[in-house]
Image (cartoon, rainbow over all chains, first blue to last red; front, side, top):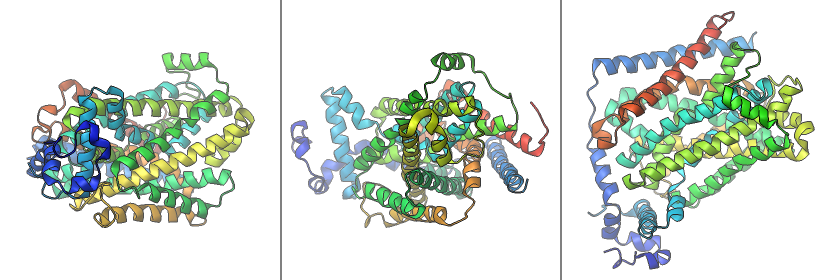
Length: 81
Length: 440
């Protein structure tokens, strides 16, 4: 299929983007893995979070909030020593 | 299988894939490597940005050749551990980091991740323009013109409307980060001292105090930041890397980490004469570093240093603005690819240029307290990193997302190790702020 569409190695340099744009079946063949994986990802739904994972994410979020306060204190100390 | 919307994005990706497949089929190993490298080198050298180089300069001038030289190597090893995960996530899911977080953890947690990313990105972008202005200032170019010139130059890199061409142009530009190597050689360092420090992790002049901890945190922030995760996964997906390319993706990331580590160490070595000659560099800005180095590295060395900072700011501004636009496009489910033209991906390019123009404009405001932003930007980047690493590890262990490519127990130990290290460094920083008299 690739050879028929002019995508064989020896003619690769001559290939133009617009030529490929007119050949959806060739693009589909080349990007088969890409499209399949993308469709798989699009089918993903929300994962169920266990209490442990939830606690960890909340802890890390609170860490950022706490550290933001610390940075603000640091900046104030630097500006008004 | 047919691609419903061929468009420019898919056609360009198919063209790139054909070249990769042909190179693999014909066993052209070097050509194959050239085709597949890019995101890793870009992200690592991009992270050697203006505030990072300033942080390394402060390190060299305040601590000389010692503990921080091998420490920087260690931080890049940690950066590799985190970034390699994004290669797998991008190549397997063909999706950006922000989109995966939204899909698996929902809007609530996704919004927090985006808030961290956009906040740190905007702050960092401001400091990139500070670097551009300071570097240009060394050559007598006014701030306004430096910002304008930088935005135009960055804009030109997007006119190719091909991810591949943009990546090559920015990657070649980013290699000028290695300019710090000749500057380090011009400083005539003691190679014995360099070897000794790499083996012994010492000396550490002044020991552990609040200044040492801030410099340490700043050096960590100069290597590991949230935007890198979003950028590399987005770039891997936009480039169209496949599962077969994972090994090359890893080589690309390792090569980037190695080059960036060498440039960072060279910067520390280049500024070490300021420590040896007892120059008080704690309040130095970029331009002052370049000028202060002239007696030790000559006018050429000083000019190269200023150029290096300017280039670091330019490359990072491009990469960080792109990472913001990728994340925005992923979350809004709108076109987000450098393979699309302006008409096809209006919001993607609008976000990209809005980020550049707003942050560049801030730098051009007279009397804006730029030095404080530069001071804290790396620190903030480190402090927002633990949740980012948390999501990264959850995603790479998610069987539904990556299947058989999920982390092994050993990689999990390394990943958790990076997360714990970054969190503890942040807590150490907090202790020095809350208890100023506290000593280790």
